[in-house]
Image 1: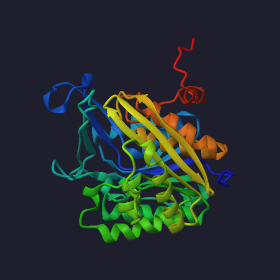
Image 2: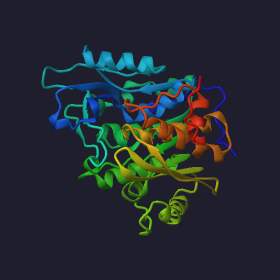
Image 3: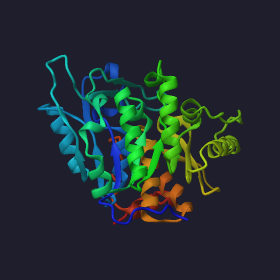
Image 4: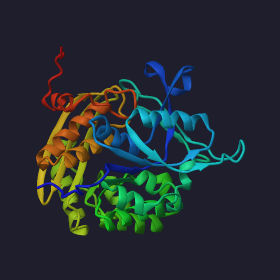
Length: 359
């Protein structure tokens, strides 16, 4: 049974996010010994939303921009190219040592050399996100969103963004939007704020209709006991992952759907990729299958995007995790952090293992 979504909403999906850019060496080279880089616009939450927007559903992005910044202009043009509607405050830079958009310094890895990523977020303008910049009654009541997707990355970015995400979740619940929460724990964000963030994340989770995370996310964000040690392969651990999700379900009984990706890294370019999902107490499983990986960043976000798109389409839960597995696999074939599916047929071909040429 699908989630009952608002029928008169202007937007299928709404995401709060802090936008930045990623610098990646060309030709899969390490960052420290490269002199030529590709720069692209990125954020975890818009990575998720791109699956929905490229497949034709309306998406709104709430964010913040540095006024008159060329990076901000690049970000706005990119958001428009991804078919997003966006809004957010224009924050004065405040001089050379003021605000800016974050930089993500990341190489893709190759073979036995794993990817390395460093986040350069000093002065990040997105840390200022606050409900005072947005008319929540207009956004959630007069316009409306069927699903609001919140990531733990933006939720833990700063005390302001933590409160911002909590207020968005409360407003979404008040006006009948469904809430998706991807816990996305980052230790550096949580350092020194464990109690504060634990309380905020627990309340957002209690309001959520969809909860997504891995074993560390559920342990560190929600204080849920993780899976017991299993065998060497990810497949050997599936029953233990299920037991962990059952503990999450017991702690958050009002949540309808739970999802957890399964990944075993063979090399930077070969992963075993699977997923488990529980909807209304019924399990859905994708056993880990080998996928080729061009760039792994954004694969988890691609999974979430496909999961939410499936819910928005009103499909049966068995298809949610299948389509999500395929959109996650698709994302790892792109050099952008976000997948750009051509159509549903392309995604289902990936699920079926059909990589033959289409003419």
